[in-house]
Image (tube, rainbow, N blue to C red; front, side, top):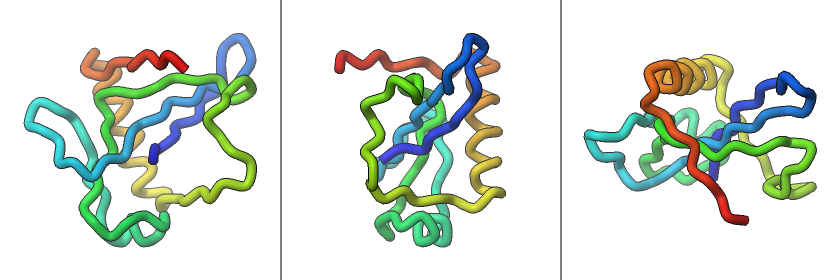
Amino acid sequence: MAFVAVLPGKAGGTNLFLLAITSTQPGRDRVAVSIPEIERHRAGLDPMPLWVMVDEYNHNILEASAYFEPGARIGAFSPSFHKKIMFAFTAVVRTGQSKAIPRAD
């Protein structure tokens, strides 16, 4: 599972920043946003405690991405919770606390 931040690319294409959603409580050295019960329900996620990790991400270009399956179920958070995650993500990016995790696939 992932939260996907979508931003237009400077050279065309659409940048995707994939932030992991995890059920493992993050350590004190990590930066994450806890997903409230109402947002888990709204997005069709499991009822267990979940977090969006904002201190690391995968980067991809939508037009060349192999990560999205046609017809796959896509959940959604409320606009206000989406803004909360984006605010946390941009804050850690600005301070250099967030890092891209390279993918080999």
